[in-house]
Amino acid sequence: MHRAGHGAGRSPLARIHEVQEDGQMRLWSLHPRHLERQGLTGCWRESLLAQAVLAGRTRGYRSHPQLERFRAQVDPLAALGAYLDVLAEEATARGYRFDRTRIDEAPNGGARPARIPVPDGQLACEWEHLLAKLEQRDPVRWQRVRRLAAPEPHPLFTVVPGAVASWERASPGGRPRSPGPAAPEIGPA
Image 1: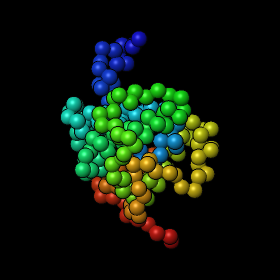
Image 2: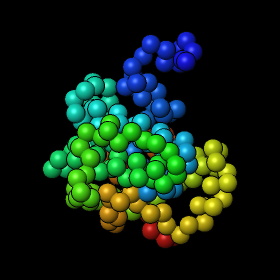
Image 3: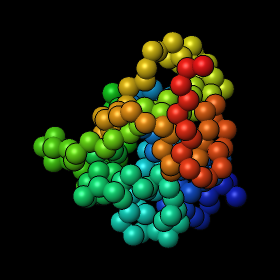
Image 4: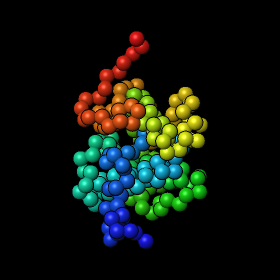
């Protein structure tokens, strides 16, 4: 039962627009095993929204910068389907039930599209962003994962040298970053 003002009478797609408290869609480049329950379920909902955008089923978020890397693929819906499939695998491993029938183009027979490059600077930025969230939302998980030497990327992505991606809107530490050019790489002092 929905309470008034909390999605009552609204479609599931309309409610998806409410998932991020900072108003930004987050399609993590990090492996979903690093996400806590709230992060994993939020990523699933936001990825379904991204799929709806790419399939032309919604007008919202059409220009969202995080969709750039999927749009650049030969088959954007297949790439996003592969992304969603890994989220569903992680959910199943945790005992959650994500409805795989909602994936428009799920990988057939284990075949996945070509891996998408993600700069190591982007992965580091997302890692800091996630650690800041985990410290607040799941201190036990934060204590466990903050000591990792390097986070694992989502299997759809392959890590390449580079700075934070131009489409990123969060700065390290999880604070919003103003749109603009990618941050320059800064070497040791």
